Image 1 (spheres, rainbow, N blue to C red):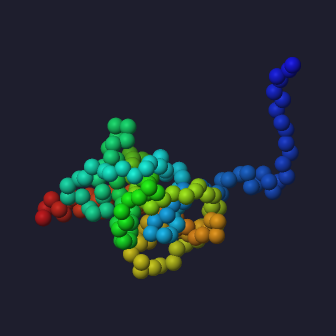
Image 2: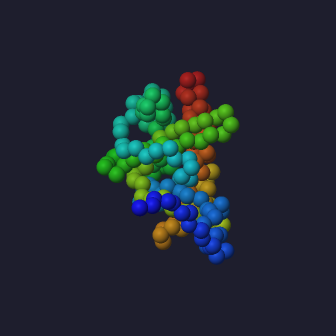
Length: 179
């Protein structure tokens, strides 16, 4: 009995080759927050963890719930409901912490983001990402990368590098120390 492996050669039509080439497509992690759907660029997601109570930090902004220890690394936890000004909700069995990381030169930032639940990973072509209209719903437009439809639902795509900028947190500590 021979166990020789023979490579399979396929001549794909040009249209199929283009579909397989995903250079213009991006993947997003879909999650729910305040009964709406959002998305994080999957390349910024390190892991998804079940809810755990963080260790509180004194004098931190209200939306920073504290820190957790992940394999020896201390990671700050941000409640996205509070950050975006939504009504607070007690954590339940579907509440998760999404660990995000951004590497920009010498500025590596890692933070856990508390969301109501995660649902799926989806593809979105760059050309299908629409600009979000201006709104007065309290959501800072700097955090919005755009809108993309998936499975008949519009997802608000979050700009992770903007979300993880620490300028606002640094300013909070600077003003609370000087007060």
